[in-house]
Length: 244
Image (cartoon, rainbow, N blue to C red; front, side, top):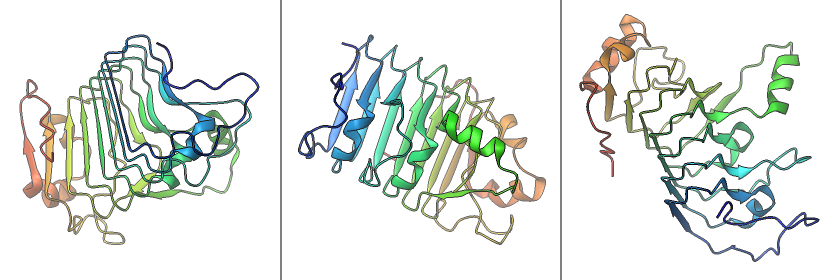
Protein backbone atom coordinates (compact mmCIF):
# COMPACT_ATOMS: atom_id res chain seq x y z
CA UNK A 1 0.00 0.00 0.00
CA UNK A 2 1.50 3.30 -1.13
CA UNK A 3 -1.39 5.70 -0.48
CA UNK A 4 -4.33 5.68 1.88
CA UNK A 5 -6.46 7.78 -0.48
CA UNK A 6 -5.53 8.37 -4.10
CA UNK A 7 -6.79 11.14 -6.35
CA UNK A 8 -8.18 9.67 -9.54
CA UNK A 9 -6.69 10.94 -12.78
CA UNK A 10 -8.63 13.89 -14.19
CA UNK A 11 -10.42 14.59 -10.89
CA UNK A 12 -9.81 17.89 -9.11
CA UNK A 13 -12.01 17.41 -6.07
CA UNK A 14 -13.97 14.88 -4.06
CA UNK A 15 -17.60 14.66 -3.10
CA UNK A 16 -18.04 17.14 -0.25
CA UNK A 17 -19.17 14.37 2.10
CA UNK A 18 -16.15 12.12 1.54
CA UNK A 19 -14.47 11.56 4.93
CA UNK A 20 -16.23 14.65 6.30
CA UNK A 21 -16.94 12.95 9.67
CA UNK A 22 -13.45 11.45 10.12
CA UNK A 23 -12.04 12.48 13.53
CA UNK A 24 -8.94 10.36 14.02
CA UNK A 25 -6.50 8.52 11.79
CA UNK A 26 -3.74 6.16 12.93
CA UNK A 27 -1.32 4.46 10.52
CA UNK A 28 1.32 1.99 11.66
CA UNK A 29 3.80 -0.44 10.11
CA UNK A 30 3.00 0.36 6.48
CA UNK A 31 6.51 0.29 4.98
CA UNK A 32 5.52 1.21 1.41
CA UNK A 33 3.09 4.03 2.18
CA UNK A 34 4.37 7.38 0.90
CA UNK A 35 1.64 9.87 1.84
CA UNK A 36 -1.69 10.11 3.63
CA UNK A 37 -3.84 12.67 1.85
CA UNK A 38 -4.05 14.15 -1.63
CA UNK A 39 -4.36 17.91 -1.35
CA UNK A 40 -7.77 17.86 -3.05
CA UNK A 41 -9.27 16.00 -0.08
CA UNK A 42 -8.19 18.52 2.55
CA UNK A 43 -11.31 20.74 2.41
CA UNK A 44 -13.37 17.67 3.41
CA UNK A 45 -11.39 16.96 6.60
CA UNK A 46 -13.35 19.43 8.67
CA UNK A 47 -13.65 17.20 11.72
CA UNK A 48 -10.19 15.60 11.79
CA UNK A 49 -8.71 16.12 15.28
CA UNK A 50 -5.86 13.59 15.54
CA UNK A 51 -3.19 12.16 13.24
CA UNK A 52 -0.78 9.46 14.37
CA UNK A 53 1.74 7.80 12.07
CA UNK A 54 4.16 5.14 13.33
CA UNK A 55 6.86 3.06 11.68
CA UNK A 56 6.28 3.94 8.02
CA UNK A 57 9.72 3.75 6.40
CA UNK A 58 8.77 5.38 3.08
CA UNK A 59 6.32 7.99 4.32
CA UNK A 60 7.47 11.22 2.65
CA UNK A 61 4.69 13.66 3.47
CA UNK A 62 1.28 13.86 5.07
CA UNK A 63 -0.19 15.95 2.26
CA UNK A 64 0.72 15.45 -1.38
CA UNK A 65 1.63 18.65 -3.18
CA UNK A 66 -0.39 18.90 -6.39
CA UNK A 67 0.78 20.97 -9.33
CA UNK A 68 -0.87 24.34 -9.77
CA UNK A 69 -2.35 24.59 -6.28
CA UNK A 70 -1.38 27.95 -4.80
CA UNK A 71 -3.20 27.98 -1.47
CA UNK A 72 -5.10 25.90 1.05
CA UNK A 73 -8.79 25.97 1.80
CA UNK A 74 -9.33 27.98 4.99
CA UNK A 75 -10.98 24.97 6.68
CA UNK A 76 -8.26 22.47 5.81
CA UNK A 77 -7.06 20.78 9.02
CA UNK A 78 -8.64 23.57 11.09
CA UNK A 79 -9.98 21.20 13.83
CA UNK A 80 -6.63 19.36 14.17
CA UNK A 81 -5.56 19.09 17.82
CA UNK A 82 -2.88 16.40 17.97
CA UNK A 83 -0.23 15.12 15.61
CA UNK A 84 2.27 12.38 16.43
CA UNK A 85 4.87 11.10 13.97
CA UNK A 86 7.28 8.34 14.98
CA UNK A 87 9.89 6.33 13.07
CA UNK A 88 9.28 7.76 9.60
CA UNK A 89 12.86 8.08 8.30
CA UNK A 90 11.90 9.37 4.82
CA UNK A 91 9.84 12.31 6.05
CA UNK A 92 11.64 15.66 5.72
CA UNK A 93 8.94 18.05 6.92
CA UNK A 94 5.78 17.95 9.00
CA UNK A 95 3.66 20.73 7.48
CA UNK A 96 4.06 23.27 4.68
CA UNK A 97 4.25 26.83 5.98
CA UNK A 98 1.19 27.80 3.94
CA UNK A 99 -0.97 25.70 6.24
CA UNK A 100 0.03 27.50 9.45
CA UNK A 101 -2.92 29.87 9.58
CA UNK A 102 -5.28 26.86 9.56
CA UNK A 103 -3.76 25.19 12.62
CA UNK A 104 -5.32 27.46 15.21
CA UNK A 105 -6.67 24.54 17.28
CA UNK A 106 -3.45 22.52 17.36
CA UNK A 107 -2.58 21.50 20.93
CA UNK A 108 0.12 18.82 20.74
CA UNK A 109 3.03 18.05 18.43
CA UNK A 110 5.23 14.99 18.87
CA UNK A 111 7.89 13.97 16.36
CA UNK A 112 10.59 11.41 17.08
CA UNK A 113 12.97 8.99 15.39
CA UNK A 114 12.60 10.59 11.95
CA UNK A 115 16.18 10.49 10.69
CA UNK A 116 15.74 12.86 7.74
CA UNK A 117 13.34 15.41 9.23
CA UNK A 118 14.90 18.80 8.45
CA UNK A 119 12.09 21.26 9.18
CA UNK A 120 8.80 20.95 11.03
CA UNK A 121 7.12 23.88 9.30
CA UNK A 122 8.71 24.17 5.88
CA UNK A 123 8.41 26.76 3.14
CA UNK A 124 7.24 25.48 -0.22
CA UNK A 125 9.37 26.35 -3.23
CA UNK A 126 7.01 29.13 -4.30
CA UNK A 127 7.18 30.68 -0.82
CA UNK A 128 10.98 30.49 -0.81
CA UNK A 129 11.14 32.33 -4.12
CA UNK A 130 8.76 35.04 -2.90
CA UNK A 131 10.77 35.45 0.29
CA UNK A 132 14.03 35.62 -1.65
CA UNK A 133 12.65 38.19 -4.10
CA UNK A 134 11.12 40.35 -1.38
CA UNK A 135 13.16 43.43 -0.60
CA UNK A 136 11.07 45.00 2.16
CA UNK A 137 12.56 42.88 4.94
CA UNK A 138 9.15 41.90 6.30
CA UNK A 139 9.24 39.42 9.19
CA UNK A 140 6.21 37.18 9.53
CA UNK A 141 4.98 36.02 12.92
CA UNK A 142 2.73 32.98 13.09
CA UNK A 143 0.40 32.15 15.96
CA UNK A 144 -0.61 28.78 17.38
CA UNK A 145 -2.78 30.04 20.25
CA UNK A 146 -3.78 26.64 21.68
CA UNK A 147 -0.46 24.81 21.38
CA UNK A 148 0.33 23.28 24.78
CA UNK A 149 3.12 20.78 24.20
CA UNK A 150 5.93 20.13 21.76
CA UNK A 151 8.04 16.97 21.92
CA UNK A 152 10.99 16.41 19.58
CA UNK A 153 13.37 13.48 19.94
CA UNK A 154 16.09 11.73 17.97
CA UNK A 155 15.91 14.02 14.94
CA UNK A 156 19.57 14.22 13.90
CA UNK A 157 18.95 16.32 10.74
CA UNK A 158 16.46 18.77 12.23
CA UNK A 159 17.69 22.34 11.72
CA UNK A 160 14.54 24.39 12.05
CA UNK A 161 11.13 24.27 13.68
CA UNK A 162 10.05 27.16 11.49
CA UNK A 163 11.87 29.90 9.59
CA UNK A 164 9.64 32.49 11.28
CA UNK A 165 8.74 33.10 14.89
CA UNK A 166 5.73 31.26 16.30
CA UNK A 167 3.76 32.89 19.10
CA UNK A 168 2.06 30.29 21.30
CA UNK A 169 0.64 31.87 24.44
CA UNK A 170 -0.69 28.58 25.83
CA UNK A 171 2.59 26.65 25.66
CA UNK A 172 3.13 24.50 28.77
CA UNK A 173 5.68 21.79 27.95
CA UNK A 174 8.70 21.49 25.67
CA UNK A 175 10.86 18.41 25.33
CA UNK A 176 13.87 18.30 23.00
CA UNK A 177 16.00 15.16 23.07
CA UNK A 178 19.07 14.62 20.90
CA UNK A 179 18.24 17.16 18.20
CA UNK A 180 21.71 18.62 18.26
CA UNK A 181 21.54 20.33 14.85
CA UNK A 182 18.50 22.37 15.78
CA UNK A 183 19.80 25.93 15.53
CA UNK A 184 17.05 27.74 17.40
CA UNK A 185 13.67 27.24 18.98
CA UNK A 186 11.26 29.30 16.89
CA UNK A 187 8.62 29.08 19.61
CA UNK A 188 8.37 32.31 21.55
CA UNK A 189 9.13 31.48 25.20
CA UNK A 190 8.91 35.02 26.54
CA UNK A 191 6.15 37.56 26.94
CA UNK A 192 5.89 39.88 23.93
CA UNK A 193 7.66 43.23 24.22
CA UNK A 194 9.40 42.10 27.41
CA UNK A 195 12.57 40.70 25.81
CA UNK A 196 13.93 37.98 28.10
CA UNK A 197 12.57 39.40 31.35
CA UNK A 198 9.51 37.18 31.78
CA UNK A 199 8.83 33.69 30.43
CA UNK A 200 5.34 32.81 29.30
CA UNK A 201 3.08 32.38 32.37
CA UNK A 202 1.73 29.15 30.89
CA UNK A 203 5.17 27.45 30.76
CA UNK A 204 5.48 24.60 33.28
CA UNK A 205 8.45 22.50 32.19
CA UNK A 206 11.27 22.34 29.65
CA UNK A 207 12.97 18.94 29.33
CA UNK A 208 16.29 18.97 27.47
CA UNK A 209 19.04 16.60 26.38
CA UNK A 210 21.93 17.25 26.05
CA UNK A 211 22.40 20.29 28.24
CA UNK A 212 25.33 21.56 26.15
CA UNK A 213 23.03 22.06 23.18
CA UNK A 214 20.59 24.11 25.27
CA UNK A 215 23.38 26.29 26.63
CA UNK A 216 24.24 27.48 23.11
CA UNK A 217 20.75 28.70 22.25
CA UNK A 218 20.26 31.62 24.60
CA UNK A 219 22.07 34.56 26.11
CA UNK A 220 23.14 34.21 29.71
CA UNK A 221 20.30 36.37 31.06
CA UNK A 222 17.68 34.41 29.11
CA UNK A 223 19.02 31.10 30.39
CA UNK A 224 18.88 32.35 33.97
CA UNK A 225 15.20 33.27 33.57
CA UNK A 226 14.31 29.87 32.05
CA UNK A 227 16.49 27.73 34.32
CA UNK A 228 13.83 27.12 37.04
CA UNK A 229 11.66 25.47 34.39
CA UNK A 230 14.40 23.26 32.96
CA UNK A 231 15.38 19.67 33.62
CA UNK A 232 18.36 18.00 31.95
CA UNK A 233 19.19 14.37 31.35
CA UNK A 234 22.11 12.45 29.90
CA UNK A 235 22.30 11.53 26.22
CA UNK A 236 20.87 8.04 26.77
CA UNK A 237 17.55 9.27 28.15
CA UNK A 238 14.33 8.00 26.63
CA UNK A 239 11.69 10.27 25.13
CA UNK A 240 9.19 10.70 27.94
CA UNK A 241 6.10 12.34 26.39
CA UNK A 242 5.51 13.55 29.94
CA UNK A 243 2.44 15.65 29.14
CA UNK A 244 0.31 12.63 28.13
